[in-house]
Image (cartoon, rainbow, N blue to C red; front, side, top):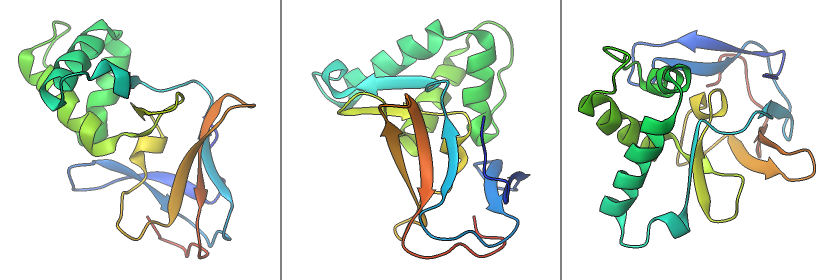
Length: 154
């Protein structure tokens, strides 16, 4: 998974547990990371016909259908750990919460998705990064916006 050479993953004492931090300054409009493998979990707006409650049910079904490895990766976005190879209700509820807190635009128009690396970028009302899907390259990427990023920026 390509991550810009001036970035690293760092463990935090926060709900996100692991995030992305700059080691050195990065100029504006630089591609920070890309994820060609696709999302861990994706849901289209059309899969939520009734509203949020129905969307949560669909997300739980999709989470249950993931491999154990992908479930662990998704749950790791918030430091949650699966208690067994069975899927306890707490894990599927936590997956829904993680999804709504860490999702970003998906590959399809009008969809949302969670990615292994890209979902580790901090969210902000004044963001220093933006997400987009590169259709020709078939990969999700994250680029710096507006201003250069300083060393230790998250």
